[in-house]
Length: 489
Image: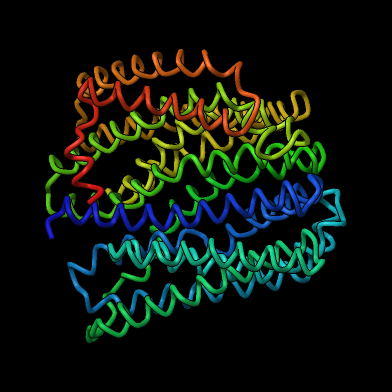
């Protein structure tokens, strides 16, 4: 299988898994918001998860991604080191998780009181299990990516999403409320972790004959490379989770519910870009090692063009139909999420580029540069949230995210350009054509939006926009129908 076929195969597997994960997440979100939990309970659930995401930083550090980088390198360079790498990484994770989960159990009541809501204490106590399950689920997934076996990695994610849906709904129906939904998350991640670690053991640990000895200094380099990745991960949490925590501290669980709905919809829309970035990133490390940067540039430029062709029109369309979409899908109780979603549409476009770019920089060996950029913009994001949330509420939190992420994306693109020498003039012309297509599509959607009075008509408006976009994309040559058909089949 040549490299292009391998990427397409991996992208299909990852996209299917992302689809299962996101569809199960969307169904869970819909059932919890519309039928099973009050907005305040939904907000409390995701406030607790946001707090635990911050705690998770200490439990994970950057070991998973650091290990994946060395799995990718040494499976070609010296496969005998793979068993040593797996053992040392898991041993370090066990030590960290033991310390963090114990500390959480001992301090959950104090932490809840300090954050201003003693009612969140049961979530934090159960969080000792959550951080362990989530950590190993994520580690197995990213490790399998490092081995460039994306089908296995995709399966782990799909299992976590489906199991989480089943158990969260079951526990809520048994009368356990928001805490029951939380335990559903714990069980879902536990099952995914068990499957992922089993695959890692059977397919990669046992099938690599250990070298006579662990390469001198390799474990130290594994830990050292995790440092910038930890900084980047910390910055990611500030971008993606700390705003939810601050909304809960400064405002109310109801405000958290509005903000969380907007962010979750953003995550759903971003699934294709995340799948593509996850798929292509290991190839950059291999191509840099083989000094094939021309091929790496071609893959990145093609991927970036496809992402922009999809997400520029998608985000514009989302802004136009945000109000009828929110009120018809989640109910009028969630109307407060409309302006959040409209502002976060800008974040969706930026994050689509980031999903394509960030992991690729790690595999290109530029994790330190990315960590510095991410750290700086995340500190700025935190500061803006402190200023804007008390003044403008959840809209201020969304605006802070968009402003700081714009800077981060610009820096990421500069680093990629310094590594791959992107053809900027050609990319500029392509973006101009995409914007022209988007403008025509937006006019078509704006003309029918005032007529939307039911969910069926909402689907019709979206379909008109999608049809207009597809016709223009094909007629202008942005999409090659034969190439799309070959990818699908």
